[in-house]
Image 1 (spheres, rainbow, N blue to C red):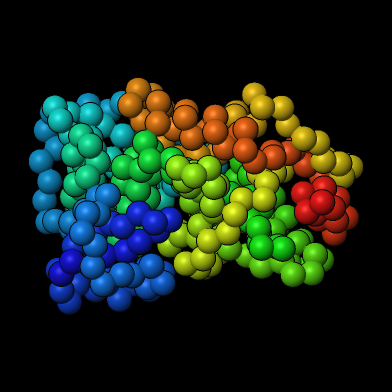
Image 2 (cartoon, rainbow, N blue to C red):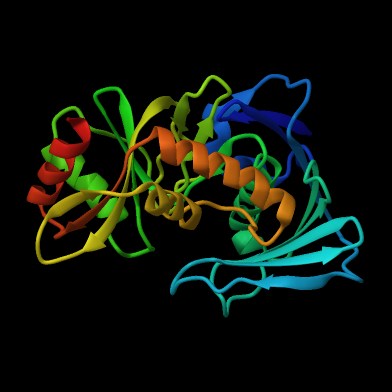
Length: 290
């Protein structure tokens, strides 16, 4: 049973047997469902078995503590991936991808983590297949205010979600767009648009909405609240370190480089040294909204 979904203007197909229990657990994808799609950027099929011989590991994911694990493999004309909720947890799913990332096949290896495996497979395929299309899958929490999206970026546990919540509690007119994996797209006409996605980490916030990018803000813990504008080089580095994609692959890296460079020149980027308090939201909002 094939269904189509559209995120950030990119359509993809998901093929799972009709009646499979996983369909009932995919409610987060409902806001992004579309009836048809002529040319999906990728298609993912759920299968019972996968050929894994000949694949060699090229990336042994080293996640931050408490974060999911993803390992990448290469074979002749193929990519492979394994995902697990934690480094020492059993592998939840194995994914085979065509060399151009337009076709993917997912084998579940644990029923309890089936949705986790599906989400990770779709996120990987989305990030990899759109890397050359002006599209960034970001690790950020996004708050909307005054018709613009403000992305808060930091390592896990540093305070992205906390800072978004401070805006919701203290800055009138604020709303949450996505709390972990928004999508940013650079369009040919120069617009930089931020999109909600079906992937939002531990916070269930799956909004099919879009807003112009207002600013990218790096969150750093500090005993005082102050915000500083980043240089062009620092802005590029912030975007580079906060986006998904296997940058060791030349083709993927070239596509991402063009997007990082253009967005760094078009959108203001800041670093916010802050405490987790209401004044931090005030200091940040006064600068970026102004």
